[in-house]
Image 1 (cartoon, rainbow, N blue to C red):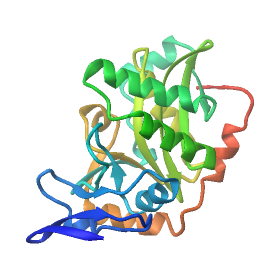
Image 2 (image 1 turned 60 degrees about the vertical axis):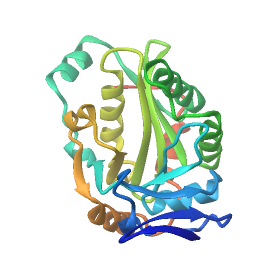
Image 3 (image 1 turned 135 degrees about the vertical axis):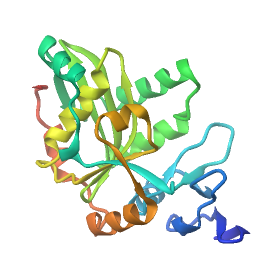
Length: 246
């Protein structure tokens, strides 16, 4: 690794080694949380850096940028907040969920939805990298259905007792909220103690997410990811043939 230093902060230039690990506490303050640049999106590197709390976020044609925000947005599943509007939606409509049935469809929907709004960072390289992680059993999708139509969901990376959320989409009102509720209801069964939401948004905060300091987040990862094992419980639920009613 080489460094571009500015006092206590540094931007690491990653080498070909997939195990390069920046010091998150030396991440830049402007832009806030930027820790490293370069490297690749190999599964080995992604698994290693996710386990340390880093995530890639960049737009073509920029190089790969790796982030570790000073304030981390997280959700403890048992603190999920079910709003009045969500309760009404659950009573008004019949919803179903599935796990890992349509991973590629979910990531394509997430990319397309953002491209229509403000442009997307979910490039073809990103799609291919996470599809490969999915094939290896590390990336998962949560899908929400009305009848036989996929109307919402999200995808992310799971290891140890942590789920790192990446992106969500909604083609029907409240569908992404329903997806998060379904996942939080499953969390205990899947040994998920913490959901990483990465960067705060009003939408996530309204559902019970909160901000915690980088140091607390890093300590939680050390405790909850003693090794970079797959979440076999999520994989087993994904093998169930039928969608399940919420």
